[in-house]
Image (tube, rainbow, N blue to C red; front, side, top):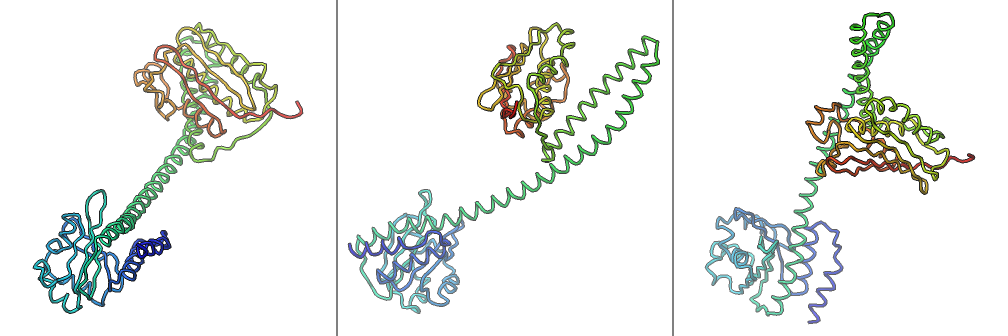
Length: 415
């Protein structure tokens, strides 16, 4: 028993960070030195029954090479028996065992009298053996076999960890390559969007400018109607171009925030005036409420915060035909809580996760009915995250929606 405790103490001193082959070598050495075996090896068997030495200690020169020259299948040997039956095999009279006949000359040349084959397991299946060799004919006690079986777990874990490490490294390399390819594709996409958007802005500005000039000098009602339609369509296209540019800048990490002191209440009043005529035209109530807890002046990027709220409000107007739209803002511990609620068509539960995805709307039929490229909410989401904020939505299909934006906006000092 003391010998087994000594083996355990020595094994505990092996650095578990060693490469599996080195760890296995040190483990075999401890077993051989303490139990009196002359040398040892680990034999792995693949799915085709071909064996290969994974690691060894004190193996005679050319032993492995000579073993590989024996044409007999490894599974026909006692090692194969240990693997098939999943139990330790001990032979101390090698020349009397017919399974070893193809190896008689080899065993005689190296004066091997006793071999112990201990199966190695992974997920309940044996995949090889670790083998101990002795020049003497020796009896192996059941206590020693029990110990060797217990040590099999350490060998198995070391070997399989090596395979898992190789697999993980391979997966990591595949992920690295995929990541680089995705980043390159994303850069190319952003460059394309940037270039095409800039190239489109110039002729669009020209169309809008000339349309305004023609409107000033036109008296024919029919032509005025056509020109206004052209102007409005141009503005819609320009808005889309601006959104694409913003999205490209955000994804490329080139959008910089500009922090200034500003009033949230004044910002909401400005947005209210912006949508007042649309609300009147659609006969919708449009209310803005700013709680008394909101500081008179906060610090943040006013322009980008305005863009976030405008995109959400525009979305609310797009999908609300009757009822109301409301902006409510509260403030607590440096966080502004801005809610935009509507009584519109709502969003189905299974679509809530995709509404912030670029060029996506909750329903293709709604896209055709209400129009839009599906970029507004994406930009609002990305800008909110850029400001270390949160955005989420609560909605039921047919029962309206409430978008909540949480933004860290510290109160401005000296106000």
